[in-house]
Length: 68
Image (cartoon, rainbow, N blue to C red):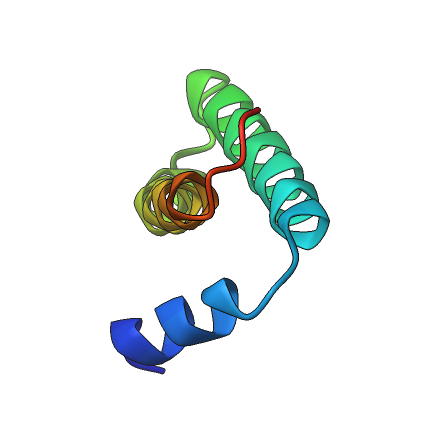
């Protein structure tokens, strides 16, 4: 899926759905960072795409004028 399509899909969601997805992504990033710090190197390359998606979610939330 291209970034524009992803953004279009995200913009179609409600603020509550966006917040829920953001919480899930934050949890996943936290768990991957924890694994990475414990020496499980396989999870290191998975963090960056999750952080980018989280940033996109937060951007869409701000576009909608929603405060966290």
